[in-house]
Length: 130
Image 1 (tube, rainbow, N blue to C red):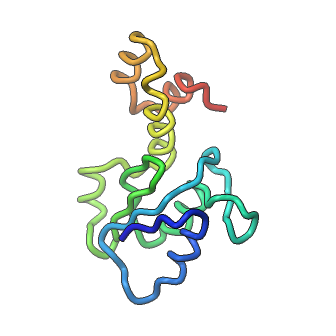
Image 2 (image 1 turned 30 degrees about the vertical axis):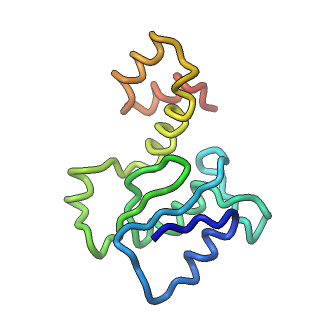
C-alpha cells in the first residue's frame, strides 16, 4: 500500500483499522532528522521522524528515498529483516541526504562515499549535517 496525498499521509495511516499490508510506503517531509512535525498539528508536511515513530510500532523501516518503505512485523521475522536490510532509521535518513545530492559531489568525495557509506559519523561529515 502506498500513501502519498501531500500532507495527510500520517492521518490516513492512523485511520486504517482493517487492512494491514505487507509493504507500506508513506511520503515523508524534508525536515531534519528527529524533527517531529505533523500536518494536523502544525500544517507542515509529516516529518520523517514523526512517521517513523508512529509506523515503526507495527512495521520495520527498510528504505528511505523521500518515501519511507516499511515491512509489516507480522509477516517478516526480525532475523529476516536484520539479515537483508538496515533497520537504523538515522542511517536511512543520512543515506537519503547523501544520495539526494550525490550528483553535486566531486570524484574524490564520491569515492569516499562509496567506500564509507555505512559509517554515520563519516556520513554526517560528508553532507555537512548539523
